[in-house]
Length: 243
Image (cartoon, rainbow, N blue to C red; front, side, top):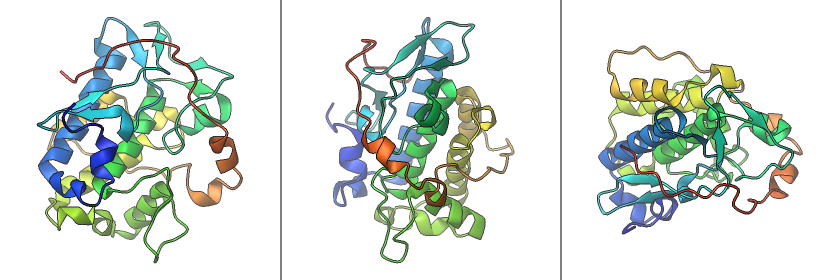
C-alpha cells in the first residue's frame, strides 16, 4: 500500500499534516463500512478482534483497508458471542469484557473502532497514555471523556489540522466514538447503526455513558495488558476493502 498503515501517518508529527479533515472522514467511513461488511454483509460472519491503526492500510488516495486477520474468528449467523481463555490483542483497543473475561463479539470490534475513531480525531495514541504536560495522568478515553463533560472537546482536535475541522462534524465523531467505547456491549451501537449515524445529518445521537477504561478504574490492570501478545494465526483471511 502506497501510504502503508494508518499509524505511520497519523502518529507522525510531520506526515499527519497530510491527513486533512476530509481524508480522516474518508478513513473513518471506510473502516466503518468494512466492519459492517465483516459483521453483517459477507457470506461469513467475522469478528476481527484486533482492529487498530496499524491494521488499517491506506492506498494513495487514503482509502482504508482492514488488514491482519490473525486473531479473527468466524461466527455462525445465530451466534452472538464467544468466550476464550487465551486473550490476545493490543493494549488500548480491547473491550473490557474481552480483556477481563475473554468474551468477544461484534460489539468488541465496535469498541476497538471507537478507540480508533477517537485517535483519528485527536491524533493521539490510546495505548501510549501520551498526553500534554498539562494533563499527564489521563489516557485517551479519560481525556476525551473529561473534555466531553466539560464542553471543551474542540481542545482535543489534532493540532496538525491547524483548526480546519468543522465543529459539528468533530463533535459528532467524538459522540459516536464515545458511544462505541461504553462499558456494556449492549449499549454500543452495531456497525450498521454507526454507518447510519455517520451518513445522516438528521439522526439524533444518544448521550454516551462514561467509558470503563478510565485511569482511575484501571489500577493494576496494565500489568495484565502488558502480558498479552498476539497468538499465531487462528484464521487466515485476505485484506478487506470497504465496499
